[in-house]
Image 1 (cartoon, rainbow over the protein chains, first blue to last red):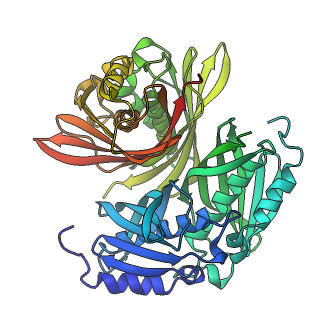
Image 2 (cartoon, rainbow over the protein chains, first blue to last red):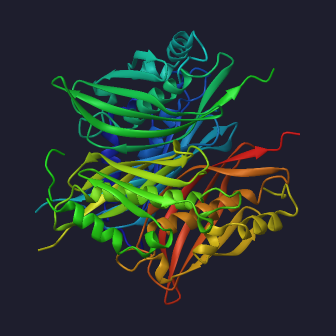
Image 3 (cartoon, helix red, strand yellow):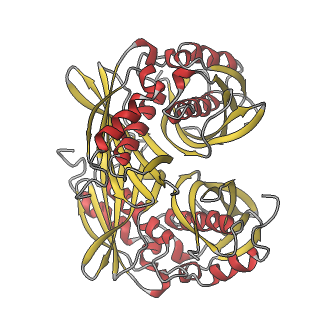
Length: 145
Length: 145
Length: 145
Length: 145
């Protein structure tokens, strides 16, 4: 992953994120994008909770899936797109605290299939607590030109 | 799974669901609960979309996770609770159409570990299209008495 | 999956299986192939055991992976091939008894990506006990002609 | 994971490995154990191959599962044992070359549930090539005394 295939990768990722109603619904922000990584941050607010006052596991999965998917998008050429094929998520701790940070990264940068991962942390009194670990498969779709 | 361990399982499941802010945020409804199964339905509305106008994969995962988890909750004793340990989700088709239906069921009803599954369908012009397939591990927590 | 893409699918599957040294090493047999399914049977013998005398979980994974993969191979055209992208396996019970039977089937017959599954049973005094549940992603590779 | 719960963890892991017929069948060796990690090495020989002359994916899964499981075993108390609940494995490249090395490590050292991971490399002309990535859930079983 020495050189970005698309020098404008950050704009591609930020534009895609901005068009996702679901990310805006949960008040998620794209807090960092580099070549091969992406970070999404979500404040803990009432609308995201499950019955015990933690952030819902589904929301945890949603930001993990997105962070790992955008990490993959950051390494593809301009004429390509990414699609999440599948992912597997382990919950490590309930998502308490002030906010949630999902950090995605590329593990295996294939031409057709990318394997990516994400760690999700809750921020509790400024301290990071690991709350979920994800491994994901992404397929790269190329324009038929 | 011949006999429910908790005869009042439907109320336990419905009460838990009602207390989830995140389910209400996405306008999800618990449309069916039987011993060993649960069904969640979500209308397709703008707030749930990703950048191409489909329902966001994270929302698909969220309802799959919940449907399979509530299927597991339907078979446990009254003094127990369920926790999602992990899940794996394959996307099969983009979630288009009018609504999303996630159907969870128990595959392996263990005392400590339950394996459950969920299929998610989108309803397009009244026709069901398979859009995701999930396999999940649930741990059963018993009251320390 | 109404019509096999390759009318000769059973021979394609059986020939591939016969060329796998690893299947012969563990004494596995391909006991059934239909359009969209495959079944592999392994006798319980000492060489396959882990430290408690059960069949090793890795062997369970091996036959599950193969059964689901051959189920996928049974639905592809003659000029194509399958590659296992990833799988997820839940263990449900230790593999005791006389033999192991893995039954693979196609869940989602895509052109490029196939989602398949396998259930693995141990046969104990003639009774089937579910010992593992697998969900798998397969990519179909077409000849470049 | 600052202090081993069992100071004698290396012997516990090595004794368990030595009693696995399946590891000896494939000629696997336990090449390293530290607190929180384990490494298994397998030579590439004909008996492990699939139809194209690569090491069979099932064997790759088998050593990944074992390396991650033994990494987990290295952090538990003496009166406990580990059981693999489930795992998810992505294939990254065909297993060519002279040998296979699986490196397991603990990601989340819980009291009841441990999340571990393994990377599997093939050694090709002395160079390491990533061929599989695994994420696993382990349950810790304590003696009832």
